[in-house]
Length: 138
Image 1: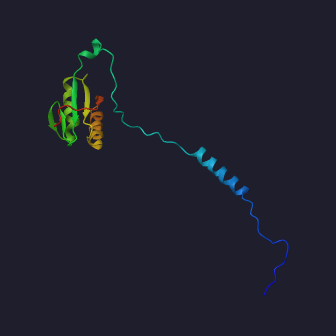
Image 2: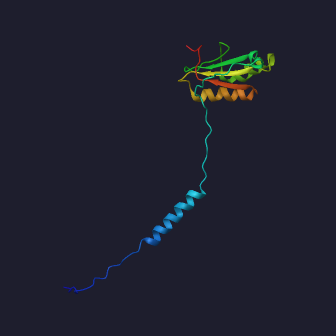
């Protein structure tokens, strides 16, 4: 059997300070060098409109596009397919080029369908306004 010596026992002492310094330096480097991406979204909050319409905007015709929660799309109370939104808007804009496209959406409507309708209206080069409530959907 081995005899133990009385006195100092050799234990390896590891100094953790340099390792912590390196970890903090790496953390600071990654925070400073990272890029933050700002995602754009749709703001569908209702705003109070206290302004009175002026004479220039009183005579502007609105093309009403409604997106329903059961995936139906209506333009001026006529049911259409999502692929024909652009053609219908372009036809109505040919009649009145100052017309504004008002896109109404029910609260539980499919967001992907709403985005497709918005993209179709933008492709028709129309001025777009969003409204969170659709009145004709049933």
